[in-house]
Length: 301
Image 1 (spheres, rainbow, N blue to C red):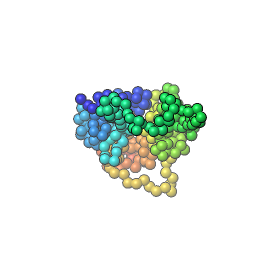
Image 2 (cartoon, rainbow, N blue to C red):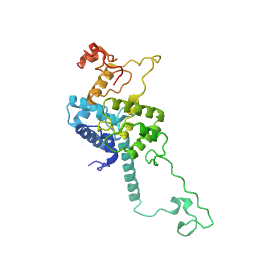
Image 3 (cartoon, one colour):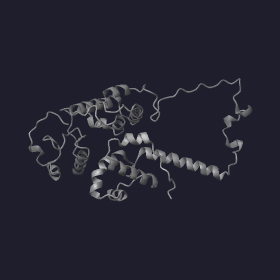
Image 4 (cartoon, rainbow, N blue to C red):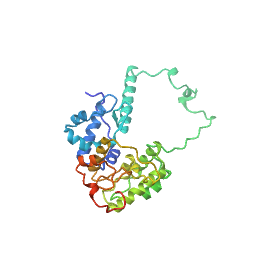
């Protein structure tokens, strides 16, 4: 039996993370969470063959699902895949078990006074505060990435106004948490808001505003999608760094898996004649004739 046989599932956060995924992708994600929970270090190997075997999939099918599924995971310093929330829960549950084991080794006996907090040994009955002592002021709660305090979060209200409408209620609580997590990682409010405005313009252009095809705001923030909609480089800006062939292949697979959404702004999508994808990569994916098509649009998707 696994040393941690129960895996906690935060339902609201899970639904927010996977709202954009297919049933098959969600199933693969859940199975990988379970395998990571049972593994030393609460992580997954960066080995596509092993991951495919864990999921009972062929290598070809896993290659199609991987871009969407593994977008929710991160690589650690050892090159393995980890999941932030899963790691946090694993550490929390492990800590509780260790505390219970330590208490069990004490046999339920009370701790001696010298092991207790000496500040509590005030000499007053039942440890109550002396009437002559002034009670310290209660600290004012501050905003926390995991416990947002209402709408008074710098820049969040503007982000909410800029974000495109969906066919469901705006997920304020979850979105605030994701906003604070993004800010904690160093993202600036103005770049997130600019990305939201660009995303709204894109969704308006393709007629998705007010439908289920607009991604939920909390999932959009969690996946750092404002980077997909960063302003295009100016004419004086340096050219993008060379891109490896395998990186181009992965982007095209991801583009197809997302139903034609092309997030890499420096280049138009592969089916645009102005794309920067090398010709031999286009040929591999049956897109070799893309550059022969006439230019009908004046901007990228």
